[in-house]
Length: 130
Image (cartoon, rainbow, N blue to C red; front, side):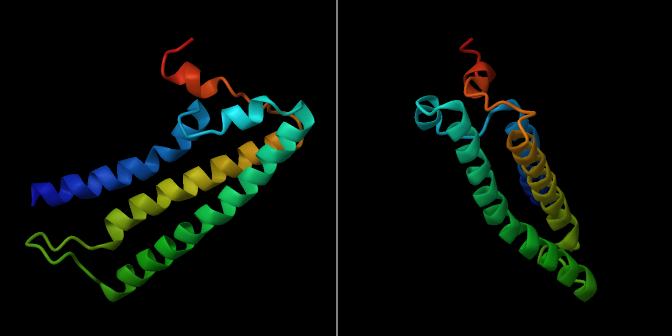
């Protein structure tokens, strides 16, 4: 039973960490491509990449949300001795995806209006290569 809860917790924590990872620069970036572009083109490309990512992340956001509602309404539980309602761990993952989507949306909007600069050094600062 404890292994099951650990697995649910790890899955939820991984998704919940995505938004903070985005803010700290921990996600994979195309810094080599962005670094050779002029500032205006870099900002435009960053907004385009944000839009693509928002669209791609919306798909699991939508389907996890549907699955949470379906599992809640149907009363589905895990097939183990704990009989954990499946909507509980899925809700944690859905919240993590939703936070990431909202943070990405706010970042994209800030870049689009020029209030946030595209920081190519953020990911190297995160791993301590200052």
